[in-house]
Length: 131
Image (cartoon, rainbow, N blue to C red; front, side, top):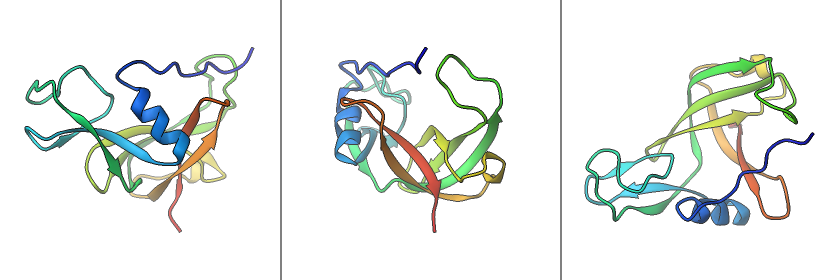
């Protein structure tokens, strides 16, 4: 079996379209100045429904990391580093970090986004060490 393919929804389609272009965008609420992820029908802080996607430079710091040794499902190659990334321009993302050796990924590591073609329609954002 192959790895599951993300299925864009009405809320997430702009995120996937931007990733296909090599751009990282995250939800931004102009009412309370919050950047958040994952996209929700309303801002998780102030419940405003009129948030929009805002560009991110895609640079940040590993806040937390775990090395996954047991695949969460078919098609995942293990081990891999899964980390919470604090983005420099606000917000956090949960993402794979590819540093060659998953054990090399550490809290405080500086990372940048790196897009990888997954299917003809889906490009996945990964993070790699900032050099």
